[in-house]
Amino acid sequence: MLNTETSQYKYAFAYHVLRYASNLIRDEWVNIGILLFDPRSGNLRLRMVESQDEYARIRRLHPAADEEAIRQLREHLEDRVDTFLRNNQAELDRPLSPGKAVQAVIDKWNSTLSNGIQLATQTGSYADDLDLEMERLYDLHVAPPHRESRVGAPGSRPRIRHYCDQVWQQAGLWEKIRKSVRVDEFTSPGDPMRIDYGYQRNGTRGFVQTLSVSRAPADCKNFAYTVDRIASSAAFGTEFTAVTDVPLLRDNARHQFVGNTLRGSGIEAVPLEGFAVWVGKLRPTLR
Image 1: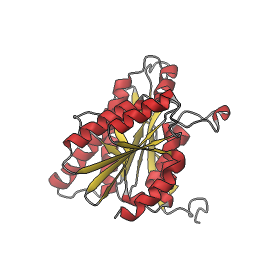
Image 2: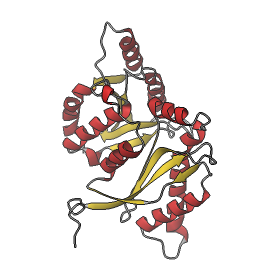
Image 3: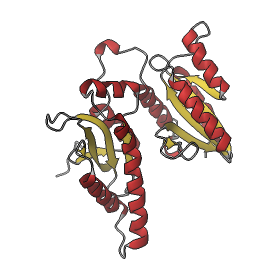
Image 4: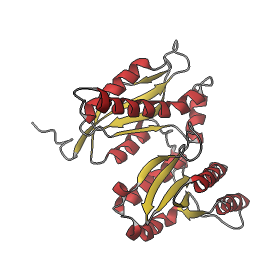
């Protein structure tokens, strides 16, 4: 009999929760990421902790946590997947299907992980979209719990990004943009930074990053530095946008600092409340 709870969704996915423990004897874990993939197509998504709030929570739960190992984990897995898939096509007499190839590399990678980092048991998931399901699972298993007293307060980057995801989808552009764009091709190998969204129009590549001015205004310096590196090394036209959780006010010193830093690197600042209008103007130019 068809399960009515799952039949309303188009696809069946599989995912693992990534866990970290600094002291295995105590067997105390903290969730640090989600690995989600489509067993049919082999499409894979990985999201790891990245914000100050998330790392602060890890430090509270595990003061001895190796943050550098956690930051490097994403690139390590993605490199393993890319290498395995290339070898799968080039060396095997009967290459595995994309879904089975991804499953094989996950199983192999899991068996070689350090003791402090593990994949939880694989679990099934039903949804209509891989990226939106990633956001749901990440909020459910990894993101710091939202306190009732914080409802309505300026949001963290995950909350800003969640809203932006909905705007992209409602504008019909979700499949036309890139998500979590690596910047190491423009900066230096091993750079862990990701830019939230990327797009291309008329020979120009655009990059969009969310910034929480209320919680982490200093993040604008890291983004501005990265933008300068991309603009100076890219062999194509570029444009950059920062989506801020609040409008930047002229009489607020912190806001002035953020605004001046962004403008100095040619970054357009768009408040979250105006993002839907901004996307609406962008929409006709994307192919």
